[in-house]
Image 1 (tube, helix red, strand yellow):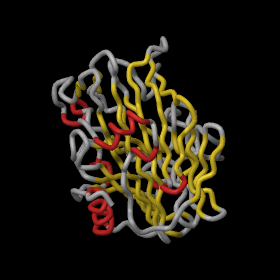
Image 2 (cartoon, rainbow, N blue to C red; image 1 turned 60 degrees about the horizontal axis):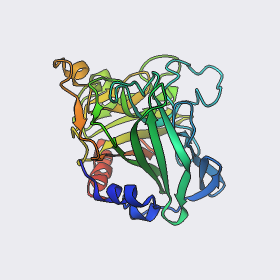
Image 3 (tube, rainbow, N blue to C red; image 1 turned 30 degrees about the vertical axis):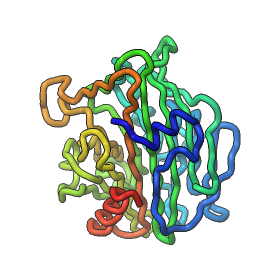
Image 4 (cartoon, rainbow, N blue to C red; image 1 turned 180 degrees about the vertical axis):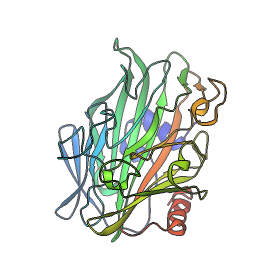
Length: 313
């Protein structure tokens, strides 16, 4: 699927050419640039850190709610006493997939490599990055341009990830597997099971708990009290995305992943049903938002925020 803004971004590598829009109302966040990283501040508080060279590719950690609470698991970026250490490939807030042209970029031998330093537009609170998706031998299977934008308000924050992938010489295949794709690994209080679990999970269609896994929905939200204060974290799927409304690899142990490809796992369809083959030279675009509210889970408020996102706000 062609995305005009991201197509222009591909051609120019200029941040101003990519026009992913964001909420019109909100606090301005500040950005501080270092080699391979960008720190996003709200006053003196570090809201988030974009790491171009994360453990398995670019990732965002930490990611904080208004008031300072960490939202995603620290491992494998940092050691927190008592925190579970399963699934070391779950890197806070990231984008990857378990079968891209036959290579596993979720937990296998494939590697998403940032090429060059992030391009930062501080006035637009926007980060752009060129990446290469390389197999074990180092062959480039896909080239990617990704953009992140950060927003904030008094009791909410959001980050958008828009990305476009293209293969220069061969068709690009996103394979049918549940292992992917746009993902969060939340801290333990948001979980439904395991040490410290105290969370709830629901989707835009009214399903709750572990019934959310595999279902199609516009958004999925987790909520929990963090040090006595209710917090909600939701991921939004954009209507322009392939497979909208997406199926979800959303687990009770804190993984929230939008994955439109894994239909054989999610729906018991024949293997390969979820494959997407993109011709050589054609970009495939995706756009997601992670929205955080310092407050209780309110499906109507989440849906209103999703509708604003869908409208381009």
